[in-house]
Amino acid sequence: MTFDKIQQIYPDARFSNIALDDPKFYCIPLEEGYALLIASQLNENERKLLQLFLPTISEPKDVVSHRFYRILFKGEIPSHTGYVRILQIKVKSGKSFEKAAWQHAASEIIQTVSDSFWLSFDTFILVENKDVGNFSTDELFGIFQALDSDFNCYSQVFVGSFHKISQALAIDFQTERQIFLQQSHRNNSQQNFTLSNSAIMYLIGDTMGEITLFKNLHDRWFSDSEMVSILEALWQAQGNVSSAAKTLFLHRNTISYRIDKFQEATGLDLKKMDDLMFCHLLITCFSEL
Image (tube, rainbow, N blue to C red):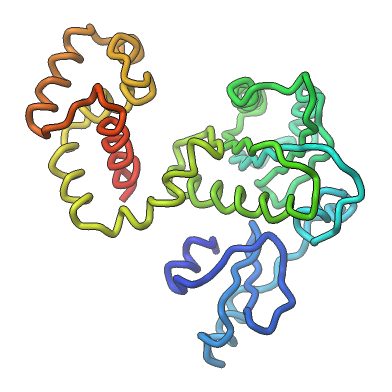
């Protein structure tokens, strides 16, 4: 059971990385954390059914021995200072996947690792100290793509922002985790996630999807899959037509012609980033619906 499915039934449900001992909430254990339901909104039969179909999930072996597990998931107050960023990796693999070897390889390459552990059978948490030798986000994504090739697996990676080690760290991480869970569930084919490339859709995606005007515009403007590819390449190229043409292996004049026809039909001006971003949001929001 995922948090998204719980939220479809109980829209007011909240996600938490740790179980809360609070009579105001009914806490449902999930593999990735906990769903908090408002107790006053549940009747007795609902509580019994939830207990019957959602058994308690045991903690992974030895995970409590990890300092950052206790800080991020158990509410332990940090006893040291500094800055860290937290990588969340969801790994899809076969039965022959060598977890220990994969974890060792990742730690050998990313030498600024402060702590790392398997949160569940397919979810890995890596805590990285801030240092002059930190890899860029693109370099980190490249590392995990290489590991995918070496270990015959498929990884979705969220690279968090650097945070000060304090009592607020667990709260900030909880938000990053909810963003990653929502966005990775929305798009299973996307492998690379950061706060900056996920935040907008996290904040407005569900709201945008409920507005008929936006759905109608998407259906009217983006029925041509080739045009969708052109627009997404143009977005990634920050509006540069030549760069988009190289990415798609198309002649620049071909793309320019298609863009002109699209602009005539929609009244948009794709040289304006507001218009291009609007197209990107519509495509991203409705492409999986």
